[in-house]
Image 1 (spheres, rainbow, N blue to C red):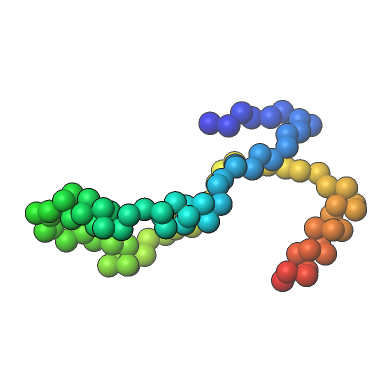
Image 2: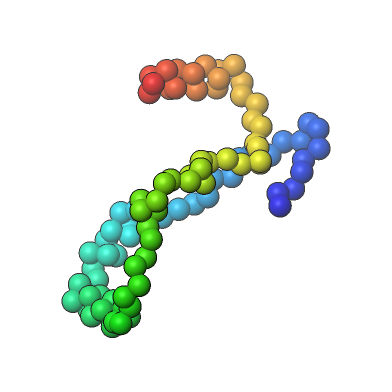
Length: 91
């Protein structure tokens, strides 16, 4: 559970560092497709039970993004103006 900050306390929002998706695609492209197919065929050999996938049934409300956590950031008038301009420019 995140720490609760007292009144007037400030913290900087922390972005999670993630590797670019292209790194995964480069890794995937370097894999031997025949070896991968043999691996999965061996692993799934004898498996004959249907697997229900999300599109096989009505979508649940679980796909909404909600969070009880919040981060408050005070922007200067100039920062607020720039943010407004970027939002307006990008619709």
